[in-house]
Length: 263
Image (cartoon, rainbow, N blue to C red):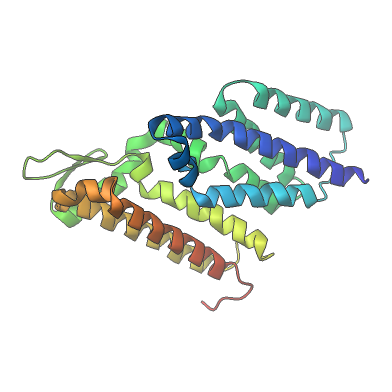
């Protein structure tokens, strides 16, 4: 068996191990909050896009011919280091390992490597960025919705004029959170259809705008009509919005990954 194919298989196994280690705590937490059957049916709260992208990246890596580094000792040292990171019983080390493996693969297969690395963005790097500069990013959602509703804004809070409790825009309710899944789906379907991710960028721009609008409408309804808050936040309405968002993301990504789309 050729060494480059074998190298692809090694990195595929590392991606699988790192991803499973990283998301296990999320699934366990969901099982503890609900029950095993409900958690299983909901994918352990994992977005189906990230599950599909992970499966495609792992399978593609297994089949890929990864060109080895000129320095085989450095290659072996990198693999050992990734195994060590994954073995550490702290989930965020696995996200780091997944990112580094993706960046290493990108040296040989750029689009596949970026896809593997981007798997860590929605559930780890995005949250980490919010931790450090959260208000500056979440402020945009709060500002737009506050202007539309005629309310005031304070940081990432939408403050109603009727003395009702403010609506706090957190990472999971932000437009940026959804945008990450759109980019991930875009990268994946570009590989599925064997096109370049930078092709048809105007379709991606439309998709990003749509993601903003869907989330802004949801937040507006929650802020302006408080009796719909629970319905849209955790009730059936939130599930409907999630389904609309999923259909939009998949539809735009599939359409935009065609070889030629008129501007």
